[in-house]
Figure 1 (cartoon, rainbow, N blue to C red):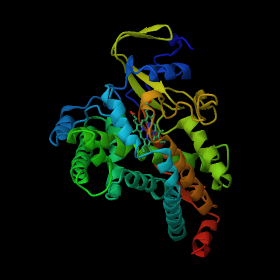
Figure 2 (tube, helix red, strand yellow; figure 1 turned 135 degrees about the horizontal axis):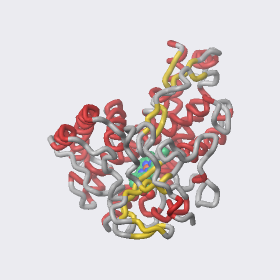
Figure 3 (cartoon, rainbow, N blue to C red; figure 1 turned 90 degrees about the vertical axis):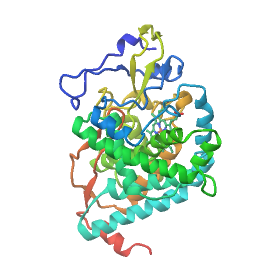
Length: 404
Ligand code: HEM
């Protein structure tokens, strides 16, 4: 194991205010990252949903006005109740359920790719984040949870806004805007929870109410899951599409139209610049890591994949997190131990199928914008747009003469 002293306290990334220093103890060595994740009594997940930038008065008041609260339930729960709640949620994402969802995922992926082809044929351009990557993961998640598929555009906006509010570096004015959006989301969620617990059939909130969770606890869980369960996958797909079209993936766009090609491109992005490149823990008491003393309350930033925040890994120089022999080819990307991501299989499946169908349906496309704006928060990253054209006209041809 690498001594903790080799885990430097990284300087603040360029995107944060100039003079700010990184307040985290950054852990990059995979063995040490695993060690932290496997010692939840020493390194608590209690800070998982704490705002990276402390919220100012106006933003806090906008949240308080709607009774916004995120009590620890799942990702930030370091008490004994975590295991039982996790089991209830896991029941909606079993390997069998996820595998059975593949035809539906493919159907949604084809529909989205056809929409992109239509748009290219009509207007000569399309944003693949909006048309291909954004909506299928949200539909799949809501269907798996037994929840109504509605207000998808709002859900996407709320997810992005909340990610920025809790994991970004917004100034006071931006915080207020984002807090108003988060409050809107929370009110919508509270209504959804109330409606779901008496709705016919099985759904997430009914099961959680049966397990004894209060309305506030269910809103807290829903707030995290309805973002984590779809926006992270959208972002993984966005980065994969961008790197493939840029020619920076191990396979080319044509090869990505096969199942193996798409899978390999997705795994490459997971290893080099996953949509969730870092995750946090906090030292629950004075402890040690790799021989170094860690004081109680030290905030720990774990590097899970390459990113611009801790400076680890790049597409051409991957970090070692996906090495074989670490249990799976995606290593620590989805965390490890008792809080490991419940959607890992689903996310990989969705990303591979959606990338594959897009590459198959849009053979001649090229990037229009090689330098899009990127979402770069502490624990989330992806290009905000993947804008393409079709100089060959091949896609238009397919859209006009394709089956059906
Ligand atoms: C590319 C997509 C995704 C990535 C990279 C990702 C990554 C992660 C990471 C790093 C964690 C923290 C693990 C830890 O603390 O050890 C996590 C937790 C979690 N993820 Fe994901 N995730 C993704 C998609 C999903 C999806 C699709 C779902 C649900 C369908 C989901 C549900 C969860 C849940 C429920 C937790 C908390 C588990 C617990 O605390 O017990 N995630 N995820």
